[in-house]
Length: 298
Image (cartoon, rainbow, N blue to C red):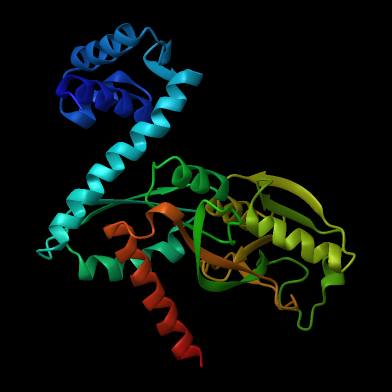
């Protein structure tokens, strides 16, 4: 590949990834006019339009989106080649990009991985399950952590741990402190839920349906932290995984028989990237943590 084409493709890929010329310039260590020039030359040379310009932001055209699928593979392969060469000397120092639905499962993985490979730089993006899966499919993240198995042939999914779900309430709620609660005791209660599409919410709604219990969605919030605060402010009951529950004097867990209600954390990556050096090492660390947890539980 000619050097000029390679520079232009790198500029294009960076702008597509970061959504602006200025952000692409910072990523590549170049001036913004240089990035704009590279992209303009690429468009003019082949008579194509790669971006719609929206003020300072750029948005991929359909043709640009098709090209980016290819450039992502090109430059990820370039990074993986360097990772492999460095691994021969036990000198991993690359950048591992993670995405997760929350910090609770991914942080122990990061701790174990960093002990083994301290030179690797790690960054983490948080989002809902849909955003995490899209980031993995779009090569924006190397590895994702979600709370359900992903049934997509493009995705490799490794089970990590089961997470029991708990129902919690304001400390002064009428159900607080009562023992032997059954699902029917939740009938008609107000709940603060995560957004539609949340794996935790979906699992709980299926639990309610199985038990023929109806509750009212009083409020939808965009994060676990927001749900916890809303419940503390007595806006309703909440549901969260045991891993994500944070003790708070304003809150209590309800002693309710949830009949094994749970989700299951999974580590995901593209099937085609299972053997990529850093991805492979992270999966191996995750498997070791899972095995250690299972041994302790046995």
